[in-house]
Image 1 (spheres, rainbow, N blue to C red):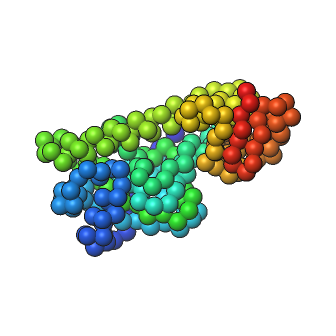
Image 2 (cartoon, rainbow, N blue to C red; image 1 turned 90 degrees about the vertical axis):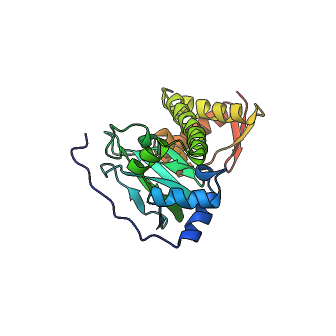
Length: 237
């Protein structure tokens, strides 16, 4: 249980037009004019943040007062568990938003998990309290912002639902089968899916060691359930 919150520092604000251009390329600000985006960034105290691969973006326990729109790169969200190995909750990339759900849950004051830069990344950090005030306004461009947020949240909820489905599998093989089946459903039941993780990240996603995952995949292959080449899996169940 988190006892106290700590606050992470912010980087300096970059030139306005550069920030506006980067913001307009994201789903968060889709359909909003440059002038309106500039106004929103000012009202939301928007700043640019850059991280190198492997850097920690937020720790579990940091004060959750900023959300971050991902301009480029990928982040990995880990859940701290009672076991020694943190579980990879999800990997998020350009166009997605870190901490968007906190915007709608004021009772959450600290980050529940730790977020690491999976590769060099650029983020636009926005003030959550300011965002709540902005969304209460009746402006037309705010209405478009609300629509964008709803669409992004729907995608995030689906990702979390899939994660819960996977972790409900009792064995590693069951988790792999559920996960690959869900990816196949999204692809239209073509019997071939591309896993967006390498083996190390895939093991983290399932909450197991890499050797344990390799053994499970090998057993499933021997039973004729799957074959693969790198990250492309052929499903035969």
